Image (cartoon, rainbow, N blue to C red; front, top):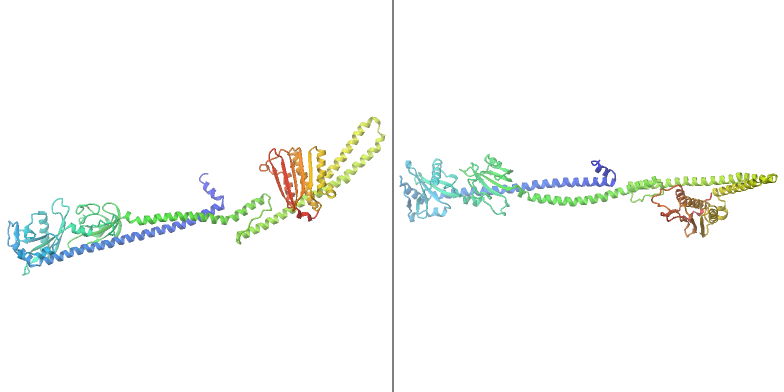
Length: 602
């Protein structure tokens, strides 16, 4: 039963059904628009963010490629200078170990242009055939023999690459010593003599700081927000630039994400992935185009930060949806009540018609279909009221005619027979013996009482005094008979003229008084009754009050007596009210419009 309670709740009222319908339609439309707007905005913002990341990635890629290209050009320019050639000739003159620790430079021939162009440490590598190579680092005054085996090893590999390809070469980032947090990479260019013979190699050191100056961004105003970063990854899947979140991450932090794998597969694009920190992010990726380096470049931002505008839009949509929902609910309530009020009025009127209140009418507002239905309903109730009035009038008038007929039968038939019997009884009275005188006297009294009872019944059925004495006179005689016959203290008073009242109205009011007095004596156990008949400016007013036990009008069902009083009052176009309470007696008020005085009489 509990499961179906909500359904029963909505089945009981058309207002609730319409409100639910309007609310569902409104909320559904609002939800569809909100969901569409949310996902459309989400897609647009995500696409904008990916486009922004792509722009940053393209810019950083161009900067890195330009950086290495410029370093290559600068090194090539330096390697062609006469000072470098003379320096290499001087180094090559020492063609066997032990190599000198330092070789002073001739100030007049010092390669000052290299010191101007060089941005990092500058090394020269000379070849001495089977005796191996010697690596010297350029200072302000001399060439100093390098004693860093890890650097020498990288320079030796670079020298072989340059000698093999007869052009510039590059070595990937590597540590200079164990635990080095600032790894470097080297680019090298061949140095040729005037004859065109290669006499050695010139190498330029590039520190990770220079790469980080391009890649590492820590400001939130650079387009990458609070969580965005751009970084490089080598073919060993280790970082080649420092992370924004992990210090000294070069050559230490592995990056094996989907974007890195796609970039190493020569793909360029963007995606939503989990980054090297296993945090969902938006990623833009491509391969770096630097000869000799197999690196890829990433530009990423946390998905959560990218979603901040989306969340703001979602919250705004929810707030707007809440406000609009309240508005829709209010409008649904107003519209549903506007639509259903005429229907509810029709329903209530139909219920009143079912209870016998045929004078019920429905207020008509507007010219729509419901208004037309209400107009038709009013016509129907009017016809029903007329038909009911005709039937009730015919019933009461028929009863009155039948009472008059029975009254005449009693008066002219039974009454005359009883009179004749009494006369005959008197004629034979003289022949009776004296011992029967008591019985005869008793029989004479019975004859008298029977005649009197017949006259009383005949009068009650059709009081002839209404025509001769008027309503006030008839009610006065009626009160006198009740007072003398029943022994009830009953008073009658009248004020005004009642000659113009129709015979029908006089008969109905007399019957109403009879019914009310009978109810007061039989049901109210009244000991005193007051009857007042007054003429007002527009109405004739009949008031009947008693001091009986009374009743609660709200708790008692209308009996035949009260029903007849009410119906007769209504048929006369009047009103009928009851004032009563337990132990405080009852007062009936009947108001009859004086416009009925022209009605035809019975």
